[in-house]
Amino acid sequence: MIYRILKIWVKAGYYHYFSKIEVEGLDNVDRSKPAIFAVNHPSAFIEPTLIATECPFDVHFITRGDVFVKSFRWFFDATNQVPVFRFKDGFSSLRNNKSSFDKCHEKLMSGAKLLIFCEGSMQWVKRLRPVQQGAAKLAMGTMEKDPELPLVIHPVGVNYEDHTKAGTDIMLQIGKAIPMAEYFSAYKESPRTVIKGLTQDLEDALQECIVHIESDEDLELMDQIWGPLGDLAALKTVNYRGNLFSKYKTASNWINKMGQDEKSELKKIANDYSKSLDKIDLSDNQLKNLTGLNWWDYLWLLTLGLVLKFIFELNKIPYRLADFISEKKTPNVEFYVSVKAVLTAFLYTLFVIGLLIFWSPFWHVLIFVTLGKIASYTDDKWNAMIKGLFLDRNRLEEVIFRRKDLIQFLNENIAYEEA
Image (cartoon, rainbow, N blue to C red; front, side, top):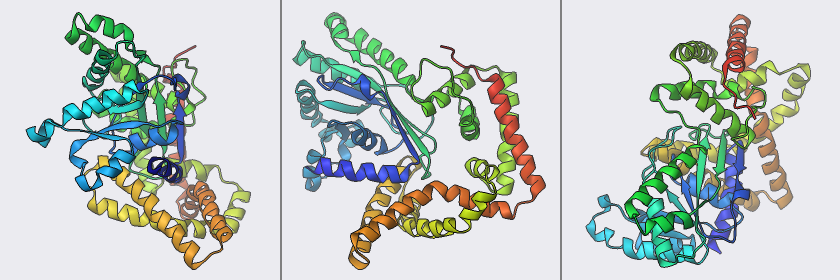
């Protein structure tokens, strides 16, 4: 019951926090078969809660054992969480892992979908880090107890535009099932070889579900071209599903393979554009909105848009408070978005309850909240318009030219994957 209630609440919160949530590959999942979801881990608990809210079935989770406080054990059980301890948690805690893995095996043998973070640790980076052997060992351990079990592993990639900012995009890619039966037949003869081979196969499959930048020095480059990539024509690709993911995955593959001369040219163009944006204090999305404004946009933004802006700013009070608390209390960037997103959902719920108590009736509050969400889609336009009124026109024209130059380079050089 608690799981179902939280699923609805968190789903509503994420659709309020993120601009767009693109989900691809749910049709790869056979609901009648037990499955291990092997997931990358760039953030704290956005990945498991996102997967839980987007899947039309219950998902169970392997969770860090050190967060399991005895007084809250009932909550972890009610939300399908199983604790697993690490060496750093101490040898006394490690003894509990046998019962934890037994519980995981039981869940899988009963047909459950079980999520495991296969990188073994958490780090915010647009890259797949080395996959650990945990998922493979869990799968083979389950098969040992039930050799006829139709168990599969699904590689699952969670990709963020920028997980530290609200109003950005997130992409969930669920890969095709990897059946365990064939691996298990060989596992009986050579366990270590099979575990190693299955882990490598899983890493190869998972990398296809993730926007993966190999070199540290190219991570900034990917961030700089992320916005302009959205303006490219639909990519001709057969390997990647979803409009957003297809573009960014194809671009990341291209960056990884491109020659040094071509990359140097791209970096220069991207850096020039990024610096020119900073000079006029605009984001890429705001610039795009500003250049698309016509007289009608100015008219309605300065009339009805002004009202929507006021409603939007009132709706944003819980977010600003959550942002302030998260920035002060969050130890590292990996936890930042998780804490902020959950705090935003919690505080916004209290905000709405307060409106219902002190304002009422229900329909007034519903209209206010709905208009706030509608206004969020126009906020960048409104901010861009206001900034645009005070911008030096020559500087603005220079930035527009640099953006066009970058898009032209991308269109002419990006290595499309032809069907």
